[in-house]
Amino acid sequence: MSFLLLSPPVLLLLAALVAPTTAATTYRPDWNRLRGLARARVETCGGQLNRLKEVKAFVTQDIPFYHNLVMKHLPGADPELVLLGRRYEELERIPLSEMTREEINALVQELGFYRKAAPDAQVPPEYLWAPAKPPEEASDRADL
Image 1 (cartoon, rainbow, N blue to C red):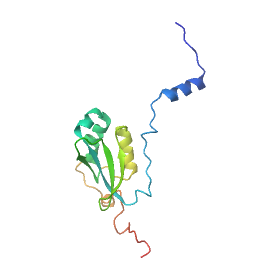
Image 2: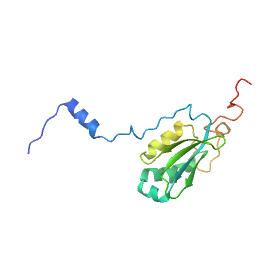
Image 3: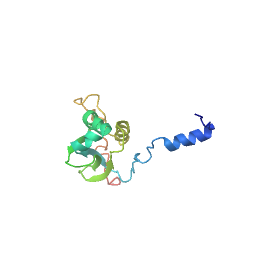
Image 4: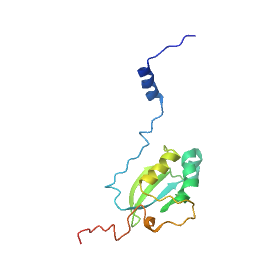
């Protein structure tokens, strides 16, 4: 049996081609579209979660730690993070099926959701409206 020796640049190229990519699963927030983001919910079906271990871990173990983030069971639904405005209007839906637990946690924190030390811990006053700003600071009529 003989082994083919490859130069380091060729090995790096091969590694890049073979390595799993996260570019397709990485979500970048469009802050103009998410203006007024105040809360979110994860919509999913229990059956879908059984085949998605990373998402299931996030839903069952991490959601209770986040303020203004809840889980809603919808039969047959693929897991999605639904971003909501102050009046519960839907701003955006983000599919979670291809994301890891770590990626979902990073996204939720990037969006500004407060993570409590324990599920039943009090939320500091400055984070009660997180990720939105309190109504008096977040006025849509800044010049009035």
